[in-house]
Length: 171
Image 1: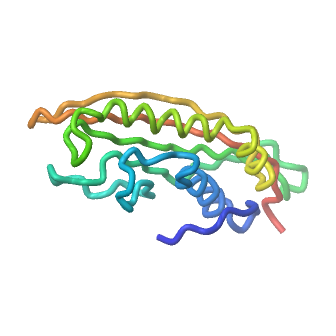
Image 2 (image 1 turned 180 degrees about the vertical axis):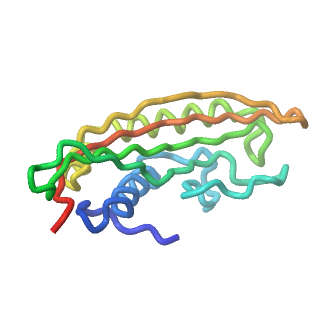
């Protein structure tokens, strides 16, 4: 799936452009660093990658999911409304992965810290406001570890991100 460049959100691209804006922010290595340096691997995904193999080399990784959108406070003509976007970002890490032995929790925490710092950055907030996505509220919903039947330990963090903005929704 090709991701669009970051730009303003309007009534014709409510889902695709808002997703691209958040994805591009998270996928920028100056904002969110990949702890596995120099690998040239895909780090940020739009859906869960195939992780069935014990030798899956892509840990840690991030999944940015498409938003849920809700409308409120429609104008009398119903041409403008307050929109709220809710995105879920998930961070996955593992203790048993290539170049990563025993660092799953550390890597998960580092990535979550980078994401939260990026989402709370004043300059990033100003950029998103200019795109029509204001009042960003990032929340760390959970950070858990899970052991599988092979005694592998995995770490999963879930961040929900809420934006809102008043936009023209019909012509």
